[in-house]
Image (tube, rainbow, N blue to C red):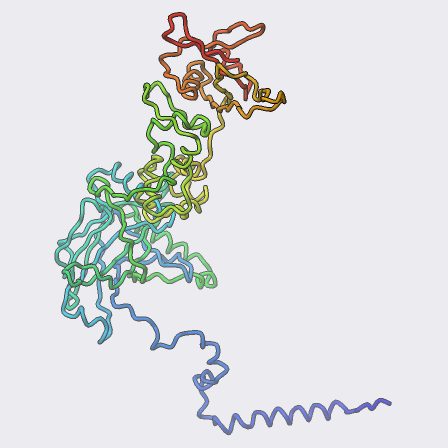
Length: 525
């Protein structure tokens, strides 16, 4: 049996009104008509939970220094993106340096000078990897010019300004924390000078102006890092920055109010944001840079090009890409077993190679211009780079070459020939039968060992050189080379014959003294 509760609509409505009035009666008693305010509502616990992830005001980090670039930011930058400031080439711009420390912060530098290094560097990470090559190219096109200069007459409160001939994109100076200090900087490079194709100024690459500040250490040198800050800029030809700023402003004025809310406001000055210090191995012109020294390198990291020429003769059987000309060695060649040569030389860079070993490997493989770029890369770091990474860092030509060298990609030879030197006392068969003392037949353990010759030129001279190396014969003692034809005839070896040899042909090399007994003839059977 089911019980059904029947209530009319009027009863339900009156009950709900009574409950709602009772729930609101407490609010009026607690706040009162005159005590109500929005701040009281926002102070309720339910609203405080939304801000619990934000750090308290007392925990907000306070930077010890502040740098203000006196140039307006672009209005065409979206919210949450980094600001962008347009500068004119060669124009002096003021950067104000402010001591922003709290009362007890860094007391050791009170009443002392600090040193700041100002740089113009690439914003794009890809160009940062190739900074050395990019700036060297700029220096070649603009001899005698600098990327960054300090306008000393207009600067205030700085002493001992210096620019180094080896660092075209940096300058340094000292300034007093107790006095007003402003440095005027000039950027002489424009953004379009580092683009593959020359477009308008807005297509140029962005730069960064960075300040690194240091305190004086115990030795008197300014090496104790205190603070670093930078901002993003683009540099245009004279008056180009003003036109670009005007264009951005006009574009924003045409947007709807709803779209404008997605963009930042333009400010008259640019505040440099805190960042990591610029690395010590910054760009240094090679004309003034010292030559790096390297420690001894394990044999496992050497390539074939690092082995003495006397060893290369025995590499015929193991490497198609590194075959030596025995004629350049005379009779003093050193022949090693292939396994010994493999222990001496390993073509591929080892993943366990240290930073010094990787530097040596780059030098031995003719990547000298990239040793500074990869100065902190070990063998494992280099091997992890993909083909696209290396193309972006080194450019298409050197990037592909470096990738192939790291992966040891060999070029397939045009012709492979297998040869074995025949001993006069032995049969040309691979296995010969013999009779022991009891009259039983057995198989001799004497085997002919063949060597692989890899030909690239497909000429008779190339084949003769490689056969002389395998047979340990001085090249000057070989007079003629013949190929044994049908019915035992001897056919003179020629370029056309070598060109038409089937791939992986096998020959036994028989040596015969010439008529005068001073030289040798080789017969390929």
